[in-house]
Every structure is written in structure tokens, then in C-alpha cells.
Image 1 (cartoon, helix red, strand yellow):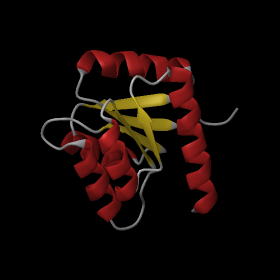
Image 2 (cartoon, rainbow, N blue to C red):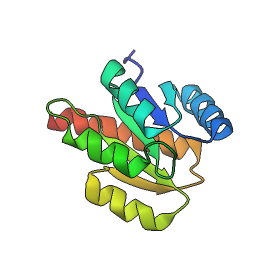
Image 3 (cartoon, rainbow, N blue to C red):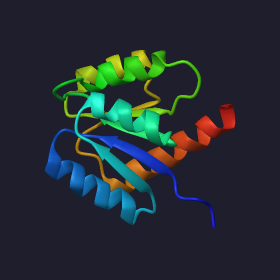
Image 4 (tube, rainbow, N blue to C red):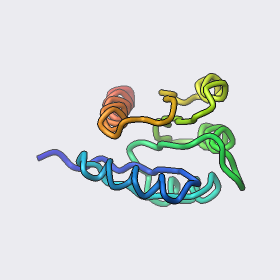
Length: 126
């Protein structure tokens, strides 16, 4: 049995974060949740997840700032998947280095598949 992928989910909507975490865990993933970008960066540094899934519109540090700061870190970096209801920001997320950009709402099975694909692609390029 292959090890469960670890995902850091960064989502400021607490209810949506809980629902998404539960759905991804039902899909066989391990999920750690942060509620803003700064907290997300701390979890990423602590846990070294396989993939990061971030909302783009958040207080404290938004998803674009998280992607930018994560990409600027020397050494190890996880692939980042951006999700947003605001399609215009998704292009900016890709420009900053997000490997995927999805429009909310995202079906849990689709999100899990995109997470697995990003993790495989990242593992194959390291």
C-alpha cells in the first residue's frame, strides 16, 4: 500500500475548509488545514507536504502572496494548486508558479485527482 499523500489546505472559510478536508480524507489523502496564507506557510515549512491547495482570496496573506513566498523559498518546494471563485486571479496564480488553477466549487474527487497528478508530476521531476 502506498503512503497517503499529505496536503496542506489553506482556506479562510472555516466551513468550506472542514467540508473539503473531510472529502479529501475520504478520498484517501491526509490533510492539514490553515486558515490564512501566513499560517499556511508555517504549516508548509513544518510538515513538508506533498501538495499545497490554497484559496486565493484570504485575509492576513492571500493565496497569491502564499504562492509567491513559497516559490521564493530556497530548496524544497511543494507543488501548489490554486482554487478560487474569482477566475481572473487564477491566471495570476499560474504566472506565480501554481501547477494547477481550479474554479470553485471543485468536486472532491476531481480535487483529489488533481492533487495526485501534481504529486506524481512533482515527484518525477525532483
